[in-house]
Amino acid sequence: MDGTPEELTTLVGREVYSNNGVFVGEVEDVRLDLDRQAVTGLALGRLNDELFQNRIERGKGVLLPYRWVRAVGDVILVNDVIERLKQPEEETESTLVA
Image (tube, rainbow, N blue to C red; front, side, top):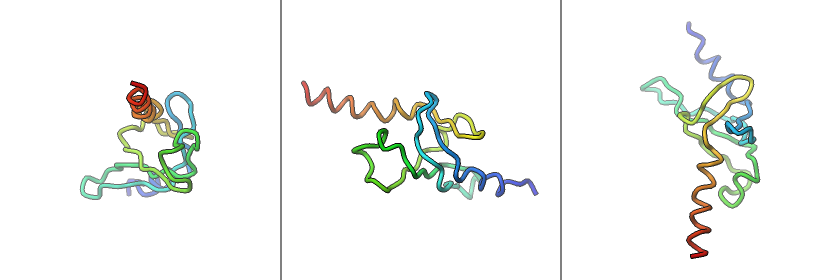
């Protein structure tokens, strides 16, 4: 036994932060690719309302690609979530102003 199922279950309940230290959400589930035996995503709930405001209906969750994960420890750090989420909004604003 390699302990993989136990390790996956320990991800549930961990808080997720951007590499800038901004709280993103909490892991509620893990998405798996059974053929490749790999984690492909993290389903997050208890989201940062400010971060996801006007993007996700209150009470809903998001699925982050696992490739965004930078580090897993007591918390999970993800790459560029804040920058990736802000870009479309900024582009929209500049389009509306122009």
